Length: 167
Image 1 (tube, helix red, strand yellow):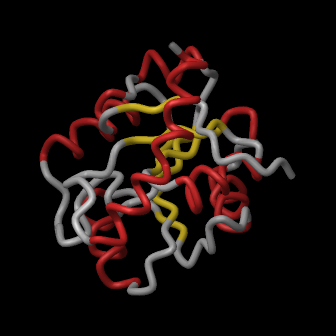
Image 2 (cartoon, helix red, strand yellow):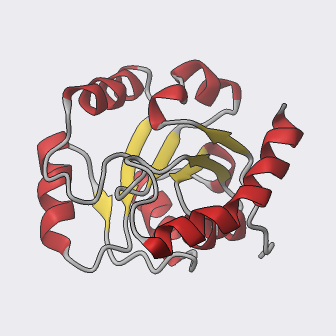
């Protein structure tokens, strides 16, 4: 299992990841973190923009599943039910077990799977270790707490390497 914190590509927001881009990468399953990737952690329900983006994926034959480390299953369960998408809880990222379980459930393999997230030490490391395409976004709502500001500051050099490679 490779140990790399560098994402394949960094996007400003999830909506910048298009169906066409995913098709070019041969992706048939997009796994995604929830908190700060698709919505701020305090957001209880998905907005219409997210609903439309996921519908566009589904209409193009691209599967979608949330893979979350969230300790409170209630919020994630409600959010996913409202969206009508499955989720793999207690994923244990950066362990690969949650990603592997999600791929098994979806019936696809590493070569056709991408993981979307906002954190290097969980989402990108898990994606790279699992051998799936690692896609990163800037955190929804930005870094708020002092720890988040430090964490996102530490991520900047790795994101810069990714941007230079894909530039």
